Every structure is written in C-alpha cells, then in structure tokens.
Length: 288
Image 1 (cartoon, rainbow, N blue to C red):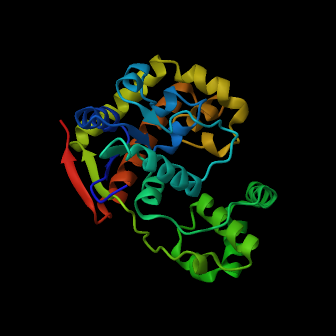
Image 2 (image 1 turned 135 degrees about the vertical axis):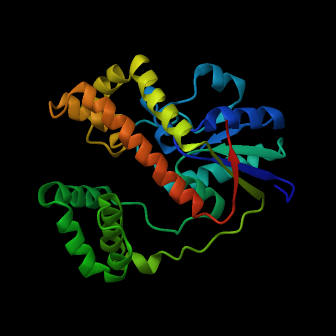
Image 3 (image 1 turned 60 degrees about the vertical axis):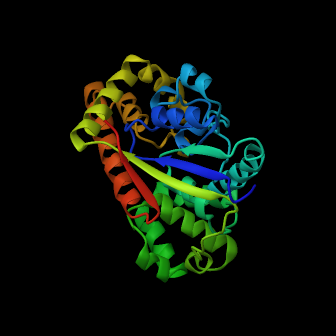
C-alpha cells in the first residue's frame, strides 16, 4: 500500500440507494466493493436485508456478502482485521477500493480502528443473556452500576445489547469497561474518503415504504418462516424479521407487521442520519 491508495467509503441511511451508487463509482474506477453492512454478512439472510441482486453482484465483484452463517460468531474486530488484510491484496492491483454500508460501527472500525477488547467468553455471554431473559434489563443496569459506574453514567441504559457487552468485558477482564475504551484513532497507511449519500426526506421515506412492499412481494414472509426456528439469534434481532416473528407468535396481524417494518425502517434511517451528521470527516451528496 502507498499514500496514493484510497478507500472510498459510501454511507447513508437504509433505502437511500447506496448499492446502486457504489456500483456506479466502482465501475467508473475499475475496482471492487467491500460490504460493511453487517446484516448482509449472513448466508441465510437475503430478501430482508436487501442483499444486492445476482445481476448487481455480477457487475462488480463484492466482498463480505453472504460469507458466514447465522450461527457463526463474527465480531467488529474480526471484520477490521479481515478487511485490512483484503485491502493489502486489493491495493496491489487497484489504486482505489470502494466500501459501502449502513453499519457505522463496522465502517468506523476500518477507518479509525476499535479498542482491543477481548472476544466474548461464550459461557459468560450465555449467563448474561439468561440474566436478561429472566430478570430483565434492570438486572443488567444494577450489575453495571456496581462494576462500572462511569460507563453506567455515560451509556444509553435502554440499549440492552450495549449493557450486555459492557458487563461481559467487566466480568471477563476484572476491569471497568470504561477503562479499556480508549477511543484512540489508529493511523491507516491509505487515504480515506467518506461520502454520505442522502435524499429529500419525503423521497427517502417513500423509497423505504416501497422497498418493504417489494420485499413482501419477493418472498420475505417465506424467508422469515424458514428462519423462525433461529429467532433467538442476535443476527435475526433486526428490522424486517423480528416484526414477522411477532406475527408468527400471534401477537400482531400480518398487516400490522408490515406497517411496523416500515415504521421501524424509517426510524432506523433517521438514527443513521443523526449518527452520520455527527461524523466530522464526511462529504455529503444528495441523490435524486
């Protein structure tokens, strides 16, 4: 790699059209695409995660799409390592490489690095998960307040995933999670250009609603039925599947599930935009 090598990162809210835009950029540069959409990593998830079509995948070579199974463990730190290894190879034959995704944590891991935290101990993870299932989120909060009052005062106490991860690290290392989080940016030996694509709000929300309808037409219901036995897995705790699982459980009608998928997708897009606007190294591009 050299200073002339560049990673072009294309980000944006769900449904904005990142895939098509990234393919156009990659074709223009004669390069390949790395996916940083954590939902598209899983082989079993297709319709519900808007995986690029066979035609799109044939237009430009993509990496990190459908490369692991839903029951496999895969972490942000593993993704960081894997992508950096791949970039070494790609930069030997390409001046630029395109990365596209909606998972900000994964993008940031490649651009800036993440703290060197231990991989979770599976037995410990299961114990914390059982604590959450049997005693609820308040039990996680109580433990975290004792083990790491600093992080307890900083974090979103409604985010059970974040609480569980913090507890894992505290119990595994014997140190407060907040002590191990340095948030120090790592230097990369290639240039990084980050582009956030967006649309007019009404246009974006219309596209999101329309995309959900198309997913239903393309077999999302059948895909979710096949995945129902695995609904307890973290990979499936995501918009598009969890609402249909509620329908299969008899809690809501199919019509309500579809309405909820649209609502939750729009809310997710809003949160993504809030996160993107907080980044200080972003170039913005409006699509139409």
